Image (tube, rainbow, N blue to C red; front, side, top):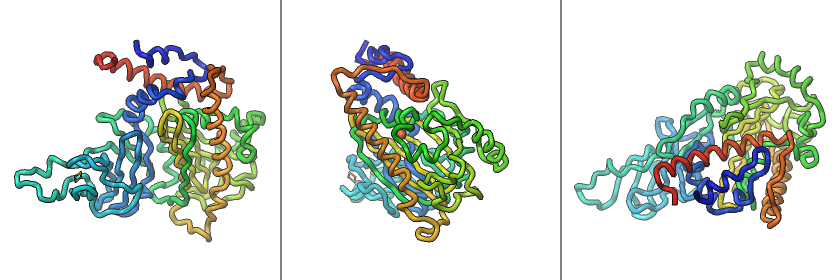
Length: 403
Ligand code: FES
Ligand SMILES: [Fe+2]
């Protein structure tokens, strides 16, 4: 039995995880191999790749993917490693290139990954054998997911469950208006956990609780919810909560804002025109999650998305993106500062909590603590996570690969 197996069996249902889950490089290596390099990861949006040759990269551990739009509109994802001697090809995070030229010896690849030209190679060199290695890509209603796995898991259920919530936003035609990035001194799971419970919301998120009825766990929002559901159904909006219970890694829900609030804004007033096929401002909040790195909170007039990426056991990056309707014009229809202030305030409250949490966990006297009944989604998150590690380790043991 190795350390990971012992650690996994130390888990106590309904309690926070053991210290090593938040601090150990060995745990992180297992997570990289069994989770991050295997599952589907949120990368970005199709609307970020409007023109042929538009690309962005996404780096996870030592893997880097180039996600690029082709001349025929198709979206490809390639490993960002040259088939000659392995150089990174795209060194910039985003840009537009008619072809992908390696900066080292200038091998040139087509957008679809085929090798187009390799300078001064012998006549018997077969270009067709040296296309870029493919990264799997799956576009879900304008959201690009990738998988570094040789054989990625099925994504059917996620697609079926999340698509009805995403469809009204017409994300292919949305527009990114702001990006922000924070490097946090916190293990990636602490950020995930934080966004799976509102036990902390009442005392900490004054602005959020002002906008969302019931977020403080004291007010009863049932009556407001029940009044909204028929309106949402009539407008063709998804209302069935997809619970993350039986080990699945995705979640979807719609809930109301406080009566009188039309958006996630400090005064409750809209900050942009309704997105996609929304006509009015009464669609509430759509909350979507796909573990391990996709978290979306959308109101009628803007969408806020968080992408979590581990750096090491003690540090993570959160990439934040705000989107509006593609036809909205800055200065006329929205003001970026006003559009972003709500989640800047709320997000920064969370980043502090996550970093404090990490610092406290580093204490020699940290030990697992019991969760409240309002943290059951954190427990579900843990179970999803532990199940993947357990079955991955079991598979490895069966193949005789564990040391
Ligand atoms: S490493 Fe890319 S062309 Fe040589
Ligand atoms: Fe929070």
